[in-house]
Image 1 (cartoon, helix red, strand yellow):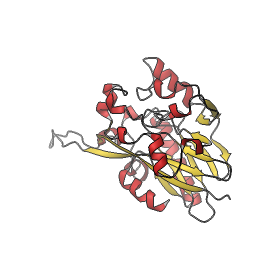
Image 2: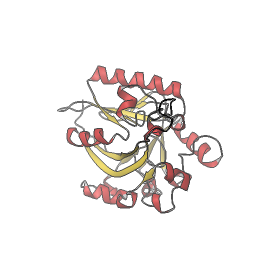
Image 3: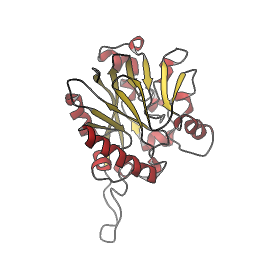
Length: 266
């Protein structure tokens, strides 16, 4: 087991209808044909993972001009990153005591536009960017055609990047950090089991579970946020088993309460 240190970066807040992240959260019924919708706030975060091998950045957040015309209007209307302009990646790294030059590697959980918006800072460098083999082609397929998912935006990831492709269900590119394939939200979603010497293990499930209701109650996200409902369910079972076996603290994708908690726990 290796000594691994974790630092949480607060990358701002997204506002969206909870129906997107918890399927059927507010539905019309015979007795309540006009239910109140919950327009909620969700956290965007990154991690800096200090391992004996490397200083690793987990995801890169949204592009700071997300609300200024960079994101396609329909996407911003659905998922408004209201303070993206206040959270450019270099500034948020600096607030945590890091610079871009300190980052030895980047791991992309997936390439949706609220996760890949800072990749431009690593374009033309030799910094390895880890992505699952199922994710990269689907991202290009989605961004370059009318098929796939609208949540991929080519200007985020269509750069001269040092892609390092992760294959299979598990990989350990850094001491103490095991990448875990958790398809469902996207075909190539990566989570991580992080084992630490003097602290509890951490299981990053990320957007496998946007919020606690997805993970704890097993309530899926809406269809628009799931590449495969069946794969999502299978990944949830796998993640829960990893949590049980390693007594791990679980890091969720965007749950605001869990985000506030993990900043003190990690």
